[in-house]
Length: 478
Length: 119
View 1 (cartoon, each protein chain N blue to C red):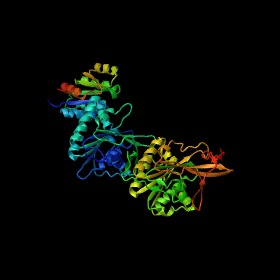
View 2: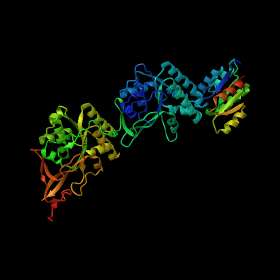
View 3: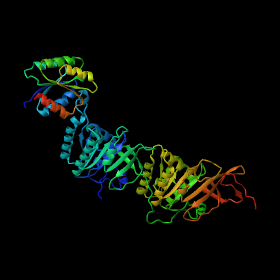
């Protein structure tokens, strides 16, 4: 089926290719949500031979030009019909009360629109906003009839119409939602502005709320990732190792590719360092890996690696390892996920490290982490990416928990790092709790971090119980 | 029917504008009047107005002397008033208004009435 671009890539993706031509679509949302900006994008997406018409009831043309320019949208190809009152309406006291507005305004307004449509023969029209017609109708029946007739007039000319509405409790726009072939909602969202499709006649679309942002360049929409129902063809049971013999032995060869791994443990146990080992080894083998640091700065991360003789600087410099520092307060989660996807698609990244799950949660701004992390991790793994999730446990010792966020279910592999107190010394233990696609060494090992060897795995722990709780006791002989 | 001169005795320029626009379409000429002096001048002109339309809502009590002038010149006039102004309506009738209509008025109904009275 032929599709017409909305002018916003992310929205086209949500709409499974764009809008069906010669239909009418409603853009809903409160003030400042980006309705007019979306309308401008739609009109600027004209192809050769197309013509675009903006019918505005609110802002004069000069103001629309200025607003578009401030967002970097070129509106030179758009024809404007501004039906907004000019300043003289106020200064010359042109308001009236002798007749109802419908009696005075409707006819000249209809004539102006017909004249503009016949003159420009637009293939795309944006009406901002159709709610204004409500004030020119004598009753709700007349309004509905007028809107239907107006939209039919435009679509019968071969035009695809986007129109906005302003709804409030006092003046809801349910009628417009029924009339429109599609409804695009711009809403506040929990963590930031979102776009949501609630209706699209004759077409499927991606359900749910998708983060969006009005910034330089206009409106950007970040389609929410929904994991594919199955893995991409060509799925292989390749292993990703660390290059550290004893760690790879623990994992019976390494982590299986295209899986989700959780590296979990209290602060300072070496989770990021362990992930860096996988990344460095991937780079050594000629693969690209990305590390997204939500907490640590890139310079500190590289410095720590250098101190441990972990070869990250060179592959980082030549682009085999991509490291990005993410300030979670500045990112919307769907925006972040889009950034990850871009790296995967553009740079051919095969391994992604999320450091850490807590930082990701901060970016969520109150949304459910379980659902969003599931979509992120499973979505990427089914695209053929190996995911390492760094998860910090609050409790240094005590009852063992894989995660305090109920996310262990989504991990194919779980590697845990623990502190334990032995003879007044704080030691560290490493173990593998789960590995869905292969066997693993289920014994706990002590380990130390520090050169030489970066990650020195000791012998399996014998003769102690309660290691997972952090306060091991000698195992009693039975 | 020959074009008639209709006096629009109103304070709001916006009301004069929309009334004049509507009367133009009917082929009548009209003149906006917002002070008693202007009315006096209009009544002294050679072409005698055939009808007056008086919006009493934006005037003070001077509107009644203008109504009296119209009555004295045998010019019929319609009074437009705001809703819930029963007192004004009664005054209007007492000062010789042919009819009192509440704003906003259905345009077609008012024009029909004007057309009939101006004939």
